[in-house]
Length: 160
Length: 160
Length: 160
Length: 160
Image 1: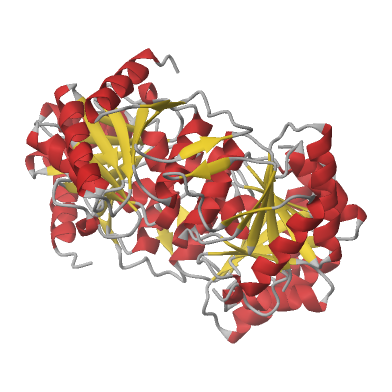
Image 2: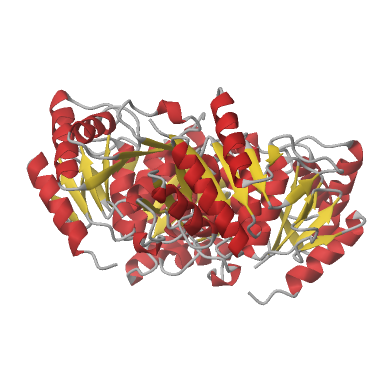
């Protein structure tokens, strides 16, 4: 069984974020992990491009009903028909989550992953805190390489 | 048709947060709004107690399968069987959301409401920001009275 | 806490089915039960009309995002944003389900209720069988009055 | 992008049904299709065994939170945490559905696929009818080979 890592981020992103996402995809593929994402554009497209070019697998959990809405580097496109509620499943699918930039949808996936106890590696994305304290499950990364290393280590350390 | 306002917050809370939640429930009931919540303990129980004592209605969207898991001030208990994914529906149900204290689940409901474009009023709860900027849809309140006023005004102003 | 009974059926229905649905709504209200349904037209509108005229409560679990899509006899409209997947929650919400006529959506709610172990009372609706045997949880009714009696009795007999 | 076909059926099954499921999995793999299923035992395990032995891919949409609940022939295990509600996504994932034997869960997936307009090929499974008429979207197969041929043809014919 393959190790699944969810990568989340906006459907629009800067060139720098796209470059980071592509490097994350490549790094996950080289580390033997399969990328799960929302399947659309922006960070989602970039991470899949990187993963496929490095020989990895990619799975999309799409909000709509048509698998053909997936970006061109999706191997396995699962249309959920759930709209934004598919974020629940994206957040739940991976043994760890890497969040890159993003908007409200990415924030929802970060927080849903925390609800499920899934470790989240944050790269240039949302800050969240309660009374000034960030959640312990949300780990900051400083680069794509760092994000991949941390996500693979956190996934490997999980017992449940 | 009744106006629904979702109230979210932790299943454990401080005495001060419970008092605020009870005042929010009473204020919403007096303002003619029905409270929707996750139906369990802590903030959820306090807001329902306040709402019922002031003559309002209360609806629970429960994570499990048994309606009897609802707190004693729930009038209408809907078991969803979805686990934490029921947070999606709590966040989606109200025309506005009031968040009080809480943990990861509350953070997920705040962010899901933002995804759906539902205004969120925050009372002593999570701070979230992207590059130092908080989301415009997340409005701070300084008291229970202030939270109720803001939520009712934001709900009334919605056109979609 | 109120007893919830889910009533399912098509968004289009014959005059006879609408009449039966209205009688079911009235009967449930007189029996002290709250009607939960999908909130739209056809059987859903008729059962709510009957329930409200008899002084009962009505709750909608809507497929879309706008509470104003609910029929005029809905008191509490919950927009789920889940599309057809909201059928899961309609099937899960009641302590018993009454199915009247309907199309594929109604069939899905009947079968999801059976998955959850919720008793289903069938009035002029789908026949289902496996190797010629109908599921024991699917009980036939011969009239609106009979359907209400059976649903209330089955709900009262539930221990889980 | 790979063609996904959902295969549904009970977590317990007869030896004959397991043999049919294994042949279905092998046939789908040879036809270039990826098997999506609920990821557990019985028909789900048999179809995956057949698919993998023939060199195909397999994806699980699990009801629980732990990917390790998947059967040994699952390549990509997606834990949904949705309980029985994951049936919605199994029914939605494939461009066509093959149903083999099964219990209430299988019936729910058949009917949810019909709701979504996904063609369903039925092999020794539930009969459903409304006023004596079976749904046009539910096609009977007489053997594993027949089921695979029909599912691949129906999937290829879809325009939406």
